[in-house]
Length: 377
Image 1 (cartoon, one colour):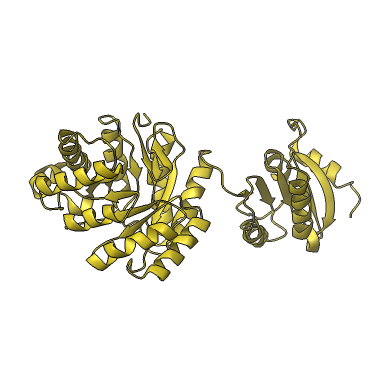
Image 2 (cartoon, one colour):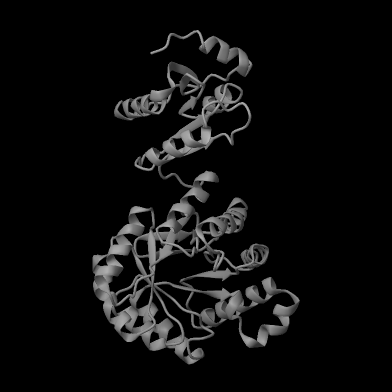
């Protein structure tokens, strides 16, 4: 059910089979060019591929030209209530505009913006949010908010199509995850256009990441969605980081390492949560894509580490380092993590060759017993 149509935002392809694109939004005052461009740089370093900026005032629109020139990724102007700001943003060279055709001043104003966008050859994002549905759909919303979201979006689609403009993507966001999922499912069955996924006003890093993972992840797993934003009440850098974790968990994108860690239990002799936190912190500096397993005992160590590129299983005094499904060495617990990263760095320097895997036929306990006979390094 992936979108049939594809649009291009700057040099970024969205929809039509392209990889799912990660985007975020700045929190600075857009007219503060140094602050805004600095935050864009931070977002890009965190994985952001498209950045949206708010344009509530003329001074913000007038600053867009410089921001576009300084930004390493495409800039989208976020416009509400004022079509003239959209026109000015387009003149300033943005890669796309986000408008709500229902609040921009009526069909004539929408037509003005469409003409300007067509002349520059840039796309738009349209769509509805559960917090700003048109009044004439209130009865529908009381009955079924997901249906109201879909219908609001379809009204915007029909308006743009009547203007012979189809270069757009669509969103139907809600802060209620089941409503958001249902709205996107219904919309995906009715339109060929790329869909921008998000749980609006999701919340803090903790709760917002969970809501976004459930909502966005469910749809992506069904093949719905072409670009995503994780909306968090936090430093916006957290948004692309969380977005990529969702994509990595589904096997849709790669960016940096993936860590597997057991949840700890009464068999844990080393404080696996402490090991995992330290390994995760050190892995953050690696751009390469590989898997590392962090386990606290012998029960799951061999099996989980067998699926990862590298792994460690801790013990009271000694720990084991695994590489590509085999026990690599036994080391003292106090140098376990340092030795793990020594082996990772050596593997990367040698070209990241992955040997053919052999499925582990031996029970975990037997494999660990054999590993215990390895001399301590």
